[in-house]
Image (cartoon, rainbow, N blue to C red):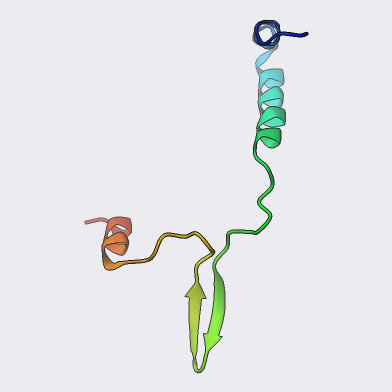
Length: 71
């Protein structure tokens, strides 16, 4: 198969289970592995233990907390 149209036509002919398998296969290759896990971590500062957000996380403000908690 050399063109996208041929690949699309072949994928349409697959049974649903094989379509899902193909989708998972392609999705795994589209997302490069994250070199740095994006997890919060506990950090000790003196007598306090703080939750530190991962790099690139938006700042936690009063407004963002209110939005998350809802009305």
